[in-house]
Length: 334
Image (cartoon, rainbow, N blue to C red):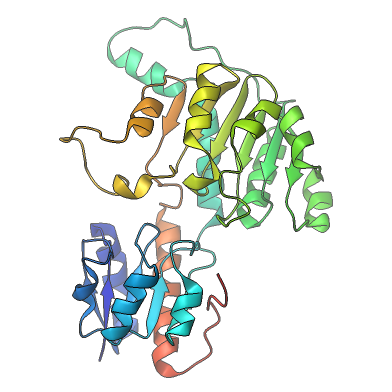
């Protein structure tokens, strides 16, 4: 039986993966609460494979330590792999696999939820009514119908978000270095340069992977190009946005509101309860202080359908590796 160390697991991970173990009797899963770091990699001793999530550290030192323990497979139970030094893993003879798609609908729908909530001030209205305050002052939003929505990234999630916004009667602009002209015609969006998208969009939603080209795509310069009172939504990766620049944009009211499911330094806080601690991250604390910002803790993926798909694909990837079968979801380069 092959033993796999599962890092950064929560009760829902254990629940969903345990349910599927009957279909993989050759696997033994060791569920670990700690994240993978240089200090915790020793927990993988005796395992020939590990499974990690979005905020685990799988850099060169960690990979070298894992290789000494005999780990041969890095299985990501997520789509992104920016936290893995893939080139170093391959150099050490390790395979890297991922879940390329689990529920693009979940993420696209959460982007819509954030947009509707910040636009119509649902979070503020909810708190007011609970306190017996039924005033409408300060809660005015705007019709999405007829507004221009800029979609940065037209992969599966971006395209589904485009379909949703088209259904609400929005005009759609899009940017992607790899254009899908067939989808553009079918859904009804227009590819434009980023500068044009920034200048004409009332709402901008990010649906991009994180890589050197997209790191801090939204910075002081790009915000300056945007339409005044733009609403910014990010359900992709936190480091797509320069948080300091976002804060300045909110303070100047260039940015009307922001809905964020990710944060560039989220690994220190997200997926855990820190309610009894003093917030040490000044930028995150400042963001949380804006009444026109909604932050959720990287939960856009978090639907039952998505977790079922993540579980099935991850266990399938691991089983294929040990069976010597083709790794359809292998990460070939970083």
